[in-house]
Amino acid sequence: MGMKGISLVLILLGSNLVSGGSFDRNCVPCHRHEKVSLRKTFMNALLVYSGEKNMKAGLRYFLKHPSRDTSVMGDEFFRTHSIKRPSELSDAELDEALDEYWERYKVIGNLE
Amino acid sequence: MLRSERSSLRRFLLLYWLLTLSLLVLAFTVYYRSQERIMLLEQKARMVDYASEQIKRLARLHRYFPELRTYPRDSRFRSAIYDLEYRQIFSTMQSNDVDFRKDIYRRDGVIHYVKILDKYYLGAKYLFIETPDNLHWYRQMMWKLGIAGVMAILLLALVGLYLARLFTRPMRRSIELLDRFIKDTTHELNTPLSTILTNVEGIDASSLDDRQRRKLERIEVAARTVSSLYDDLKFVTLEGKRPAREEEFDFAPLLRERLEYFEGMMRAKGIRLESSIRSAPIHADRRLLARVVDNLLSNAIKYNRRGGTIRVRLLPGKLRIEDTGRGISKVALSEIFERYSRFDESEGGFGLGLDIVRRIVDRYGFDLKIDSEEGKGTWVVLRWGNEVKGK
Image (cartoon, rainbow over all chains, first blue to last red; front, side, top):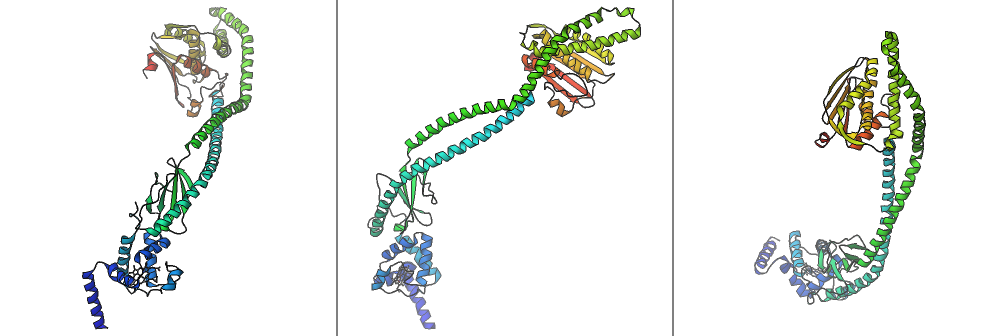
């Protein structure tokens, strides 16, 4: 456990130096791998959660406790996909990731 | 009209006006609101259509965002979207003073219709549709209300007048009755009174012994009192209607004459007179001015104590009469000018005196001040000419 812990920290530190924030490290790779568009999940989430605070709170809960019933993706989606695993990220990192997620994909300020 | 009558009438009318006006305002507001409601409902039918069109466009934009990012616009209306936290996502509206709790409302010359979305396309929970306000309706409404208002106010004024007359009829009756009574009595009083006075004056006082002379004096005082009362009554009933003969003259001789006239009365009550009289020009009707002086003097005598003093001072523009009577209370002082009211019921008279004084003083724009201290006496100051303007 000790060795694993140290190597994880090293990996985290290393990746932190290479790529940007929590979002790019923790969310993007898996989503790319799973071929689940983060734009798509964002727009679906927006359709349900509407406001910024509401959406962040809702997603924070979902990412920790994923369930088909509370997912924004709809039944159609789960015919071809399975539900994701609960996130093990710390609260701080999750919040940072969600903040970046919102900033990158938000609609407010991007309409003309 | 009596002053008490006037003030209760004023109070009544004020109450009447306040009540009816607030009712009127209420009625108008209710009518206006209901008409506005109807107009808005008509507008709403159209705006609901606009909203569903707009929602379809938002759904499309949601699907293609961010490749498409142009907010959908329409020449017939303007719109805005807000999220669940009341944050504006985008707006093309003129007025962004929005109300989330209402369904449809008018504001700043526009009408807003609020639609809550089932699906929050682009994160929008609230869709506002804005169209220009129906000003034609508004103007027509204001015209209608204006005309109705003027008519209602006229009607209310008429009803108010009628009610006021109804309200004061009993008072007017009794005053009229009293007036008529006085008029009749006055006429009958004149002849015997002159007879008494002429005869009393005709008696040679030096031929009488002391006791007889005192009796004669008392008769004379009594007759003079009645005579002065008679003059007052005549003024109230007849003289008031006689055209005044105004002229510029010296007040001093008139005042001396009046003092002389009251000499007997003062002597009978053991009152001492201290007078300082200087020549004082005044512009008025002699007889009216005599009524003023007579009334002020007779009050000073009537309400003075036995063996008291009366101080009379005449200067240009100012007459001051001071007595050492028991004085008048503050309350009585405020009601003192009412006709038929006497501030001291223990004394006789019709209570006409000060009302007459007030009427004459007002007529010439003179200034009359009465001040009194209970137990000490009363001061009356009459001012005219520059003395009044200079104040």
